[in-house]
Image (cartoon, rainbow, N blue to C red; front, side):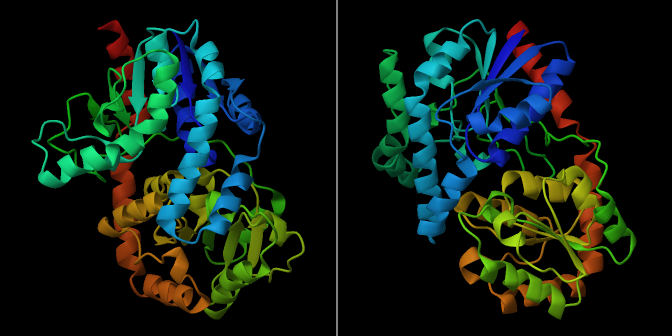
Length: 399
């Protein structure tokens, strides 16, 4: 089969689809990922065809600017979503053209490609990263849910209906109609989220999608790891992507590591780190696969994006969650509930003192957290989420 997958956003919004595309390729299918032009190298180096969609911008820089202007987590998330949705809306013709000739469209969590696939009468499969977005259609809606559908749903569906109007498709009445593909794949583990009994059967928890990438660390990094205790991994993902150098923010982490006697590997902060003198107990690293990096650590301080939260659980490392936007807070809560993390530090509360407290809490409960992390890791790695997803996709097309 020829399969197109469309997604937009930061690396964490693209990476799951790269894993899925590679797994589909391995099974004899031909895949193409359509996304921001800035992700061409990332996708093509993974051995997947790439189709540039939308303006040639640095999406991580653009989203960092939005975050810098909005300290409120909810407003920051909404403004980022609106920014990405506007790109998707303006790129619909490109998406439509890249859908042509495919046997299947995989619709990302942003619903990118859904209307275009429907207009072309090409079968579609949905992917959802956030289970809160899945409608509970087998349950009679409460009064509150009815009010939500009446007042809020029209605002959520508005950008999608703009695209649907271009192709003379029926308008969506509420947000529960967004997930309309044959199946909806949820790359999350049943050991982390319990399947909601009010979901339709088409909503399938597959287990996480990941791969253990082959990686040979630079000599300097290998030497650092060999000559001391396991370090804390600081991996804030796109949240550490800087519009401009921010020495005060990096100082906060470095000083906390010094005062708690921790060695550290620092990922990100590329603009600040250029002229920053780290102590011998810390080292900076660039783009290193989490499948390798997290295995080297004592614990991980991360922003709880979908990718880092799942990687911490998959590779069995305790977490200090520092969520910046609303969906990250939800992933941080998952870590806390599974007893593999200390209490999250909301970005607005982040300070040197609060971080030191969290590290001390981590140390005091380390054996319990570490054992729980390793036990959960074993369960997650027994699921083979990618193989399940590929099997479900093939069954759905053959049916």
